[in-house]
Image 1: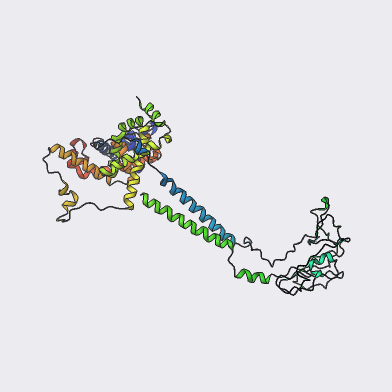
Image 2: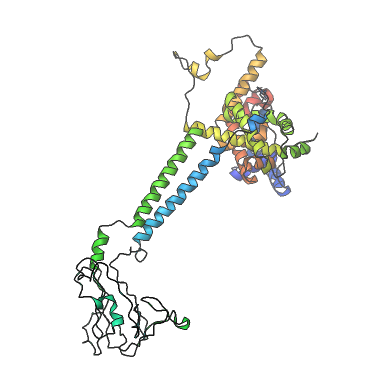
Length: 297
Length: 204
């Protein structure tokens, strides 16, 4: 009975013809050739096909292909310039994607800093809140000299305004505004009111206000600076105030940044500009590499 | 000087030593390129390109069959040329006035009209038949069957030259041979009696 030869048998027959089988495969093929006439016929036809090809005439070489020194020292700059351009293009694409994605993902966008940002930093710590206010305690002995250029100062009516006023607090905490009439300018400083009594509790959904100290011990001013004193080395880097256990004492929340939001609407974030720049760079590099490749081929 | 010494000298940049290797393998390289590309000029270019590439990259030769390594350069040069042809197909030269289809199959305007011995004519026709059947093969089958059946290389060398495992070489070779067998059976009258297949051989 003759079995149909499968592709595995044909591969074995072909390799048997070249003597490229291991002993086990060789025994299997020899058994197949004895038992299967179709396998034998196929093997003979492959044998004759190979004989025809082996007897195909060789073509004479038209010339010698020996190399000269000038032939092998051709410049090859363009061949490695193309991969370099492509690699740079990929890098620029990745940078552009990163720039765009970082602006689109929530929490990754960086808001540009504007002048209207409150300069006071509020740091909330669970249980004990600390308020850092950059202030200078009053010096009891000497008032720093103030020089007015061109006469006494006029009331601040322009942009910028002055610092906030804080009735009831030491003058040192009222900043420069205590020396001047109330500022009528735009974007004035934060008015802090230090009161000993508790503020009425706000309703649900209102902002929980952090407590602030009611008594502040002024630190002695040392050194010879005209305005700010120099503290003792062991006191440098420490908070000026420590919180007291008075959770009912409120501190005003930072002012809403409505003017800042209006400013942001009209401006383009630098990250978007950088992303667009990287995208244009990637496209340009890729086009350049394609042009070079076309020129070479 | 033996081949190993020539290779060592070529590795140290000795161009004369490399050129002696070129002279030893240029016949094989050119025939491989011609069978792959079916064009004398293209085969010439591919062979030259392959030897230049071999000299420039000879430090990548890690031992083994140097012949297989050179044939790999030739095969790569041929694949590059075939890809270039696919990107930019060329139009074959044809006579302006086509009067019948016979001119396309064997252009009379290109034929050499000098008288030739019958044997030479038969050899040329057989060679053309073989070349026609090889060109009908897929490129990956073509290289394997040329290297094994025409150049006489063993499977390991072909595996090194093609860059494919032995199993792939065996499989491609078997399929290529079966296709060539079927194709050559159509040119039975050109084959010598001892090479005729099946019933044509029995009729002799």
